[in-house]
Image (cartoon, rainbow, N blue to C red; front, side, top):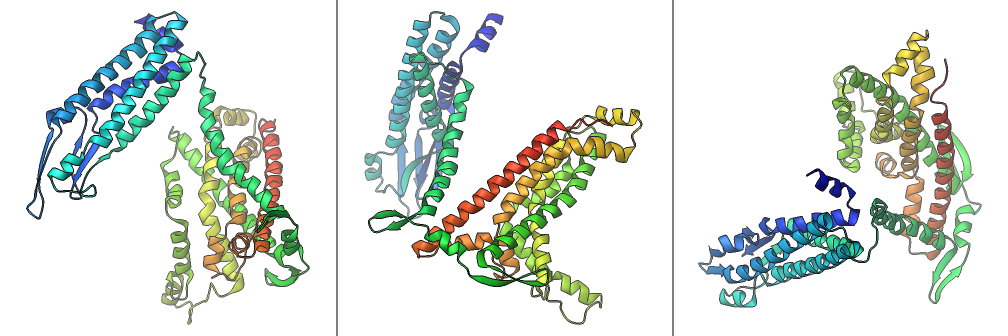
Length: 479
């Protein structure tokens, strides 16, 4: 038994995957994988085994029509062929990997196992396609919409497992080595397709405009953004004459900065209290933390409209103030420019707060209590211990929280748009209006603005990353 355990621990990755796929292929014989539907009603979920044990379906429709289905003959053929293939695959995959030391023979075993996986996959596909035959439809006077067999989740999982098993077997048959880095390739492909390519497309569309004959180089998008067009913008009650799109960026930056500051001011003490409570109770996590994460599970738009209703003319706040005889007329919170600006930042802070709490809490909970005890032993008080030990060690979490809040809030436009009823334009609004415009020049301007915003974000992330490295180096400051 010890020798088998040792051999299993020394098995290459592709061999482990191949053996697991063969075992699942055998187990799938007894797992329901085909859902039979008669007249839009689910009748029974079949496995290959139940095709033998309960092959008959008899159903009476509302019209009085009798539907009779019998899968015994088809089930015998499929079950026998499948179980032979599955047992052979399990036996070969395990025996060749555990009891054969010759490398060439192992490659032959992988090749045979791959062939068995392919046959097993073909049988499964044939079973799914031939479960309800044309003869059954004709005999019961039904159509494919009224009588059919649908593959369940486990049936789809079997197809995926068999494909993975075929790939793993092919690795072994070719004598290739599969390591765990291989599992990173799908994520790399995901990043390339959904991150790198869109960024390259933005870069391309920022400098090239679509024409009837193709694309031509132009800087018209830059000219739209940097044209000498000024507007009067109001910030904190002060009217300023600024370039149009610079004022839009400044307002978005203002929202992002105050949202980040608000989240940090609220999140750090809260995370600190929760971490201390979890450590005192000898817990690795805090149930109270869930209360602050729960709002993330609700749609952002619904939360924002709830806040708007709270501050509206006939909302909860005005009702409470009126019942307390503090006001004679409703306060127009959302119509007052300064109050609406404060409410917008408050709602954004509430929305992004969990993204600041989680990274700070995850760092604080991992600080060794022995470090704090050592600080107390050296004569430091609670305030000095916090400033010299806890705060420096928690800076990586603070910087991660700032990144998670500042970057999204800079381009977030839903909350300002709903709270101010579209009276405040942000970078997100501007990009959306440009991209959705029919003018190719404005489309290009939208891509240029996205590109400039991306450059600003990358510079900001670079600064924060350098700060993060300095924080890691300064985490063990001396008293």
